[in-house]
Image (cartoon, rainbow, N blue to C red):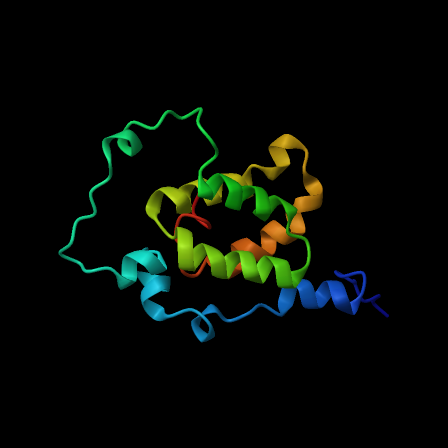
Length: 139
C-alpha cells in the first residue's frame, strides 16, 4: 500500500490555503479590472485634479506614503481574515500600476530578507490578487 502524502499539517492550515474569498463577490468589477482605486472610479472622468505645487515636489524622505504604511500592514497580516481585508483594501484604495508593481516586489522579496514566516500570508495574497493583477504572478 502506498502511504498518503499529507501536504497540510491540519484542516485549519488546509482551509487557509484552499478556501479563498472570491473577490468578484465583494469588490465591484470596475475596481478589479480597470486598475483604478475607489476614489478614481467615483471621480468625474473629465475633471483633472490639480495638486498644489508643494505636493508635486514632495521629497522622498518625507513621511511614509499611505501605500508604504499599507505595505507595513501587509507584513503584519497573519490570519486569513486579516489577509482578506488587506486584499480588499488594496483594490479599493491602492490599485494603480505603480502600486501593483510595488506590491508584487514586496510579496516576492520576503525570502530575500529572511522573513519566511510571511510566505503563507503572502501566498494567500498572491493567490487572491493574481487573477486580477497581472504584475503579481508575472513578476
